[in-house]
Length: 305
Image (cartoon, rainbow, N blue to C red):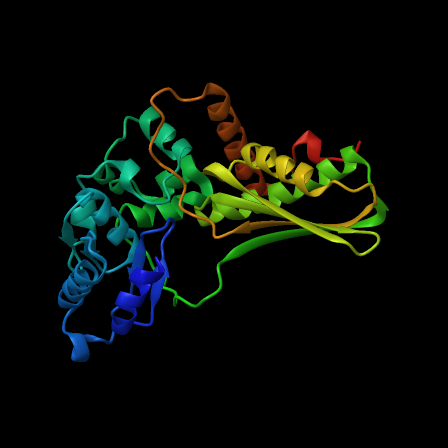
């Protein structure tokens, strides 16, 4: 990735790595006087990478990151795609919904229940109709099926985005039940934020501060990336076990989700019925929180006995 960055940096300061290694978003706004229109810039980068690194990258040119990502998915493993300004909706219309970044598995389950499989079918629904099905996520889906994405391309040297949740114990403790209850509360906070962003966690880290000032930090990948509280807690609990190896009491816990990504949207050939029930449960809880407030409902394991 560092070699690719070195090849393309001369063309723009706004270069953002995508969700996984090998993907780059590049904003060429304002560079036309130096390098020509965006298509010419993309071709120059392609030729430079091919000559300098010995491989031919796939590439696309479009008005925003969402459409660019879909376009590159269509031409893998070799090719290019150009979507002009104003062509976003027409480009996406005939495509399957699972190609849209940010559309989650439980979204696809609801679409399938309504016999909706293609972008143009969902684009025909109003925002009010989508709200009945998806609640606050309706706005994201309404924009996504129309190719609307206002997110900016970040510069390559910007810090990795993080979601952080903290808890300070009133009295230092080493009670396993209490600590795990707190970890689940932190997971709930991060999970809610992830789902509102339409993102998923692929890496969780735990920071433990002990009474004697010693700090322990451990992290683990979330596989597959998820915004499901129960899946996240399973990973967080494993990370906690890795970090909590001392008998000294705990004073403070921090849970960190680094660089949230678009969740995997491709549905499993044989869906896990337990996971599907969990996702429906969490969706229902989010609807209750949206209507009555964030503290109106919690899982039993997050509540004090």
